[in-house]
Length: 409
Ligand SMILES: [Zn+2]
Image (cartoon, rainbow, N blue to C red; front, side):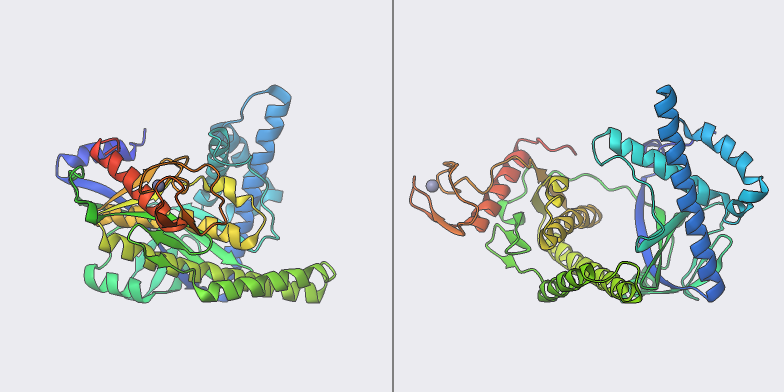
């Protein structure tokens, strides 16, 4: 059976005025002791399969110059599972192993598209361990009454609903179809499940954005001094707690360098660090959700710079790299929230020189230093705040694209 692509299914659904919507739901889990053991075991299987398939692929290529494909590997892998030494690979449901193989192929794809580095082997010593599985015949279920998620071979696991989850479920219930689940655990002792959901919703008609009034269009720039700066002159600070936590984190990491690797103190400190990491990540996500929601609620069209984040992440400074990761996550949040609320996001070319052009006379100043917060245009004499000037240029570029219909709809 050839599976239809989302595009093909959407084309069919469109006849009935429907379309597919995909989204994720993530819950903190409270597994029982036996369930925890299974989760650890299944994650171990997934890691083993991932590493095994990756190693085979590399080996085959080295020896023959050919790419080992999923189907061939799966055949030999299934034979291996029957060997008494590898019987433990039969413990999780079969999709756990399959998903791990698919992850290798996906990582290869990303590598060949130039989107990421060559895949690396998974280590059991990293703070995050996970496995994924797919839904079949209702084996993954969410019970919103009892607040449980049923997982294949693990059973019903208690999950925690956030306030937002509760509000949504109370209002709309849960109508989605679960497609897959990813279970993660963190070395600090926290367990999560992410469900991929598919729902059929009424077809959204693409509006005509070309004549959107300028006051309903906003340009947004990001910086290190502020989280974001918009073309109306508003600046959103990076949250305070984040700065404080980052300082603590840097201190702990320096301390870790002086401990003996593998010692009790080392492990204790390592746990503390990974817990703080997780805390920062969660807080950061909340913040990004809130800011993206505000932006989408208050504007019709949002213009963002399509920054090439990966190039920036290489920067070793922690604060910098977190800011970059946040930005790309923010972009994603704004995009899907806008999509759901029938608003428009325009991404402008990342090479567009937004900060070096005077928004007044449109002259470019190549010599403008990045450290100058305020500058006076030598051509027309206008005094600019560097960031606000950039946000205004971003907005203007967005308007230009909008008016000339250069955006794909
Ligand atoms: Zn000027």
